[in-house]
Image 1 (cartoon, one colour):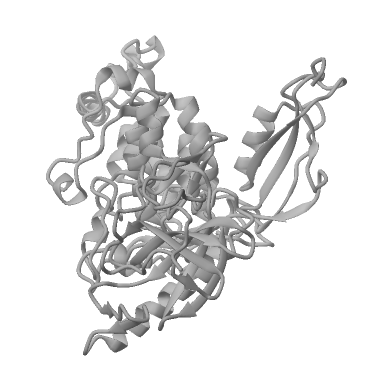
Image 2: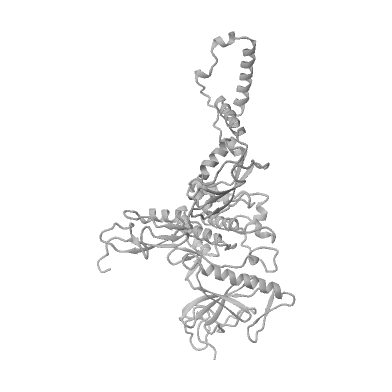
Length: 535
C-alpha cells in the first residue's frame, strides 16, 4: 500500500496525494531514474523521500527515521559513472570492468562517513547519525537541520554582509576545518552552497564527498564549485588538502563581503586580480583584504597553507611565514632620512690628511651616492656589513628546537642566520610550547645545506587545552579567547539578577580549568539580564 506521507516533509497527505499542504512539495513529481523510489525502506528503518542533491559520488535523499519519527538526510553511495541500478530490488551493480574501482571508492566513502562521525561534538559539522551497508552499497545518515544555504542568506541580507557579521559566522567554521584537516578530512567543496545557515544564525558544514568526486581527471563526474575550487582540484595528479579548503573558504568569504565570485582558478593563472571595488576596500580592515589575498593565491605553494595561519591573519596578529623572500627583506630596510644630522659631515681637518685618506673619502662619497639612490644610509650599510660578518661565522645549523619561531625568523631576516626557513608542518606537541620549533632538518651541528634552506616543524601546542577563567568577562571577549585557543564556542542565554547582560555566567557541562581536546565545542551560558515580568 502506497504511503500517504509527503516525500519532502513526511507530513500526512490528503486522499489522492499531490501537493503537500504543509510544505508545498508536489508529490506527483517523479524521482530521477537513477534514484530509489519514494517510500522505499532501507535498513528496516529509514523511509526514502525525494532526492535533495546528486553528484558524481552519490545521491542525497530526504528520509524519515521510522524508529524516532524524525526527519534525516540519507546519503547513498551511487557513482553513476561506475554503476547501474536494478529497478526491481534497488540493488547497485558495478558496470563491467569497473568492479575494482567501485570497491575502492566504496571503501573511501565508508571511511569518510566514519571520520565525519568522529566530529559529532563539533556543532558546525553536519552530524552523522548512522552508517550501514545495503543494496550492495553504503549509506550515511545525517541529522536533518532546518537551514538555508549561505548564498541564499547573503541574498536575503541584500547581497553582502558586514565584516563583523561575516567574521562571527566564519570563525567557528575556520576552527572546525582546521581540526578536520588535521584528522585527514579534506572537504574540497567549500562554497556558499555547502555552508548552510541555521535558524540561530550559525553556519555549519555540509555536503561531504570523497576526494575523487571533487577533482577533475578521476573516473567520477567531477563536482567543482566554480570560483571556489582550487587550481590543484583541476588535476588528478596534484595533491589536494588543507590549502585547497583554505582557498574555498577564502573565496566564500570574498563572496560574502563583496557579492563577487572569483574567476575559475585556471583562468586566474593569467590574471590573479580580485577586482574588488574601492568602496568595498575602504569598508574592510586592511588586514582582512591581505589575509584573503594571501589565501587566494592561485598556486598552492604561494597560498596560505593552513586554517590556523588564515585565522591569525584575519585577526591581524603575527603570522607564521614559511619563507622570507629576499625582495621583501630589502623593502623593509628603512629609507634614507633626508634630514641628515650635522654629525655625519666630515670635519674640515680631514682634508689635510694625506692622499690615502683623500682616496678613502672619495670612496665614501661614491658609496653615499650609491646608497642614496637605493634609499639606504651609512647606518644601514654598516648594519648589513655587521650582519654579513656575523653570518660568515656560522657554518653549522644551530639548535632551533624549543626556540620561538618568530624570534628565529627575525634572526633569519636580519642575516644573523645565513639560511632560509621552510615550515613543513604545524603539529600538536605536548612538550614544546605553541609557536616554538619542535623539529628541524638538518639537525643542530650539521652543515648548512647547499640549498640554503632549513626545514622546521612548528608546534601548535598541546592537543589538550584548558578552559580559561570567565569571571567578569563578556561573552564577546571570552568567545575570542576560546576561538584563539582552538575551541568552538556556542552561546546559551539565561536570565540573571546579579550579572550584567552579555557577561558570562558559567560553562555548561564544564568548569574553568578543565582540559578539553582542541576543536571541542564549548557551550557558554551568558546572562540575558533580569527576567522580564511574566517571563
